[in-house]
Image 1 (cartoon, rainbow, N blue to C red):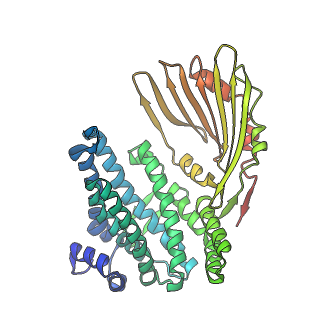
Image 2: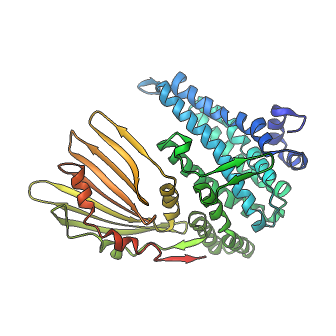
Amino acid sequence: MDSKGLLGRIKAILLTPKTEWPAIAAEPATTAGIYTGYILLLAAVPAICYFLKLAVFGYGTFLGTFHIGTGFALSAAIRIYVSSIIGTMIVAFIVNALAPTFGGQKDGVQAHKVVAYSYTASWVAGIAILLGLLGSLIMLIGLVYGIYLLYLGLPPTMKCPPEKAGGYTLVTLICAILVYIVLFYILGMVLGLRSMGMGSMSMNGNQVTIDGGSAAGKLGQWAQGMAAAGKQLEAAQKSGDVQAQANAVGQMVNGAVNGGQQVDALPPDRLKSFLPDTLGGLKRSDVSAESNGAMGMQVATATATYGDSGGQSLKLEITDMGGAKGILAAATHANLQQDRETSTGYEKTYHQGDTMIHEQWDHSSNQGEYSAVVADRFMVKVEGHADNINALKSALGSVDMSSLAALRNEGVKSN
């Protein structure tokens, strides 16, 4: 950082970004220095304020002010802080990987500069967590202004042509959203970083190296696969065709999620064929199937209920994540684990080979659910009343999982 110091840099990047970005791009720096002198300090602001809000000041409602336990508040603050640090690292990796796609030059240090200083608005706005509803508006403004800072900062730092900064910003934003969805989900399940399955990350004075086979590396690969969609968006913007622009954005979202692939969900009736006539000895009654799509992503679901005259009932749901399967795959390969017990039951998430399993059971009501992720694409879940969790496991075994898994590549096309 230059002679302005931390407060001077914050003031300059927020108030005069157009003149500050060239100065940032030109100044000597190291990745480690950016973390120790800026990221680790500013990322702590929203985390500390969130802890104070939960544990000290509390949340005001018409019923009074509620305070959250210190342990829970600390855990939540740690999740925010850790996700900010790791998220910055991964998004910088993505920005660097995308540079040639948008006519820029790869440079790990510059990528960390543009991400870290663009986040300044959001981190500083984190103070507003203490202000309640007004604070939410301020934080939203900070987020939007951060996007604007990124747009201004990409040309001087990553050397991309100014006319391509819009597409570069949009792709980075989509990837960043996915990064934080995955990070918050993982950290919410397991706070211990060694259990996160994010893979190997190492930092030296000049760059960050991320294991290509890890979840973080997969995110970088997804970013690489979005080049074609980014070019289509540029062409659509130049043509002025609104529909073409909408289609290009949809393909870009799909590419971000699925590594540059278009994934069409199975037709609802095809998915419905996997609902067996009987489940756990109960006959099938109501059956439904539907498909939904938005922003280039399709998801299909088939549902059936099973019951008998004695009042027993189970519900089976099979979902083809289709266009959103990349998110499901990232969660699966993140090696998530959870084991929580209550006074009346338990909930846990674990892996059986390559399959992620989630089970939940309540002894007091003899009710629960048991689900499995099949082929990184399909979710199969059975829920309802039963004698025990083993009955739900047995019921799920009635579904032809192997035939379902064989369809993992159906509807998958390269953009």
